[in-house]
Length: 282
Ligand code: GLU
Image (cartoon, rainbow, N blue to C red; front, side):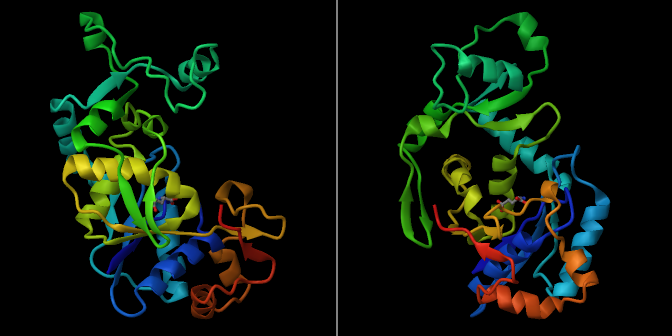
């Protein structure tokens, strides 16, 4: 079993990250490996000092990872190659919509509020002027993709085989953006495969990503991992911990004299520090 811990260096790590790490360590407690990946594709929010800080946090917790560390910003060639392949197969289309355009289209009377993207650019006529213009993003045509793979993907979670309800719920996901060489879904499936990950451990709020990621794995001929979507750590008010809300960081806990390895042991046994609990499964 090979699992991974894949933080984004957009802030200091907090208890929720340590819990995620603990779930991965617990999963391999009887044998296996845990690998580290730095999800640093969001150039506007990621900072090198947070990468340094996360290594310090790992040292404090007493965790060492197996194999080399994967850094997403160093993997652009692999993302480009996959995108080019999907483009050649006619599965991607350029999208010129801004976030604002999409919100406006969804609010329009005929817009489908259930869809992630109203499909504005899906069947644009081939216009030479547009061919010259730089698209805002590249989207996966989920209808074409599903026709190729033969239907909705399922996945194996710790609760059994999971199915996704509606093809439309998949939406035409963005796979690359003007300002990012690969969007999260694409980078995630390519990197999980390249790291040999057989168990994806992550919090339940990312479970919604799994159907589209399974679809991409099928399209790209990547192996199917198993999934462990764990419950989210919340504070006393039931609020999930978030970097932007200044949730207490691991480095703050270290400064307060908390014993790192003891904390990690407790989290592996699902014992949380006072004032925190696990959210109910949804
Ligand atoms: N980098 C993501 C995060 O920090 C996790 C991605 C994943 O586990 O698939 O939220």
